[in-house]
Amino acid sequence: MHIPDGLIPMDQAIIYWIITLIVLAIFFMRISKKVNMEERLVLTAVLTAATAVTTAVSIPSPFGIPMHFFLIPLVVIILGPLSGTLVCFLALLSQAIFLGMGGITTLGANVLVIGVFLSLASSVVYDLFKNINGRVAIFIATLFGILTATVVQIVILLLTQTTSLELLLASLLPFYLVVAFIEAFINVIILELIFNIRPDIADIEKI
Image (cartoon, one colour):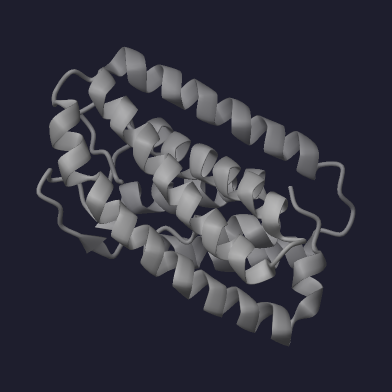
């Protein structure tokens, strides 16, 4: 989901940047009121590095926009949706600068897709199901989050008027559906392991 520079018109790119910056500002306002930050900072740093590495592994798609695993649903379940936005921003920024993946002008759009909509969708679904069944909640939250991000990216690409809905549905949706199922299974295993070894991590306040 790394939309490259030049694909999104500058006026649209600016709007996506503004929305992303507003969400990040909300995060920093929320986080500034917290006292015990040490463990959260460590987890944020570790998860940012892990996200940068995981999302750098790309799977080619017929449309030319690489597919990849996300890790953001896992971040959201551990730290919360706004934290997912920050982790996504830092990971994608480092990739744009050091690996040439995505772009700077399109960073706002990419973060909006993965860091905002994916995070929010995963968080809402996880909160709905976590008291019913933890594993089911993780699975559905991951699946729904990635599919939501896919739909949002399709809308953003349609607004560029450079492609058709038919092509996007045929090239992106089936592949990310597969990615979503695979990542959902993996997240269930990883989060079950983390919460069993460190149950205190499950109790970290979600921001």
